Length: 246
Image (tube, rainbow, N blue to C red):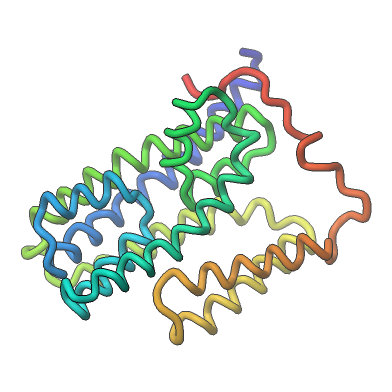
C-alpha cells in the first residue's frame, strides 16, 4: 500500500472511529427506553442485533410505549417505512462494496446512515471502502454493547435524554459533513435539508423528517441546480482496486 493510499485509509478509519463512538453511545438511550417501553433485556438486544437501524428501532419502541403490544402492527409498519432509506443507500454503496454474496449480505446489514455518510465523505475509492466497513463494524459492535448496557441499567439512568447522547451523534455528523461544504450545491442541499427537517420534526413521527429532507438532495441532484454542467458519471469515478478493509 503506497504512502498516499495509507494516508487515505487512515483518514477514513479516524472518521469511522469518531462517528462510531458518538453513535454507539446513543445505543444506551435505546436500551434504556426499550426496557421502559415493555421489552425485556433479551428482546431489546435481539432487536438491535437483527434490525440494526437506529431510526427504525426508536420508531418501534416509541409506538410500543404509547400503544403497548396492540400497536405491534403499527410499529412494524413504521419501522419498515423508515428502513426503506437503507435500500436507497445500498444503491450508492453497491459499487463501493463489491465482492461475493457473503460480503454483500454483511454489507446489506451494515448499510446505515453512518456507514454510508462516512464512506461518501471520502475522496478516494480506498477511503470509501475503508470508511464503510470500519464504520459498520465499529457501530455494530458498539451499538449492541451499548444497548445491553442501557437495558441492564436503564432504571438507574432516569431520563436518558438529559445526557445529550443524541447531540453527540449529531455533532459527529456535522463534523463529517462540514469539510465538504466548499461549493454552492452542497451548501444549498445542507441548508435546504436542515430547514425541511426542522419544519417537519414537530409534525411527523421520528425518522420521517429525515426521509423528507433527503428529497432535497434528490431534487437538487436531478436538476443539477448550482452544480457543474458536465459532471463525470459516478461510475467513471470509481476504481474498485484492492479491498480497503483489513
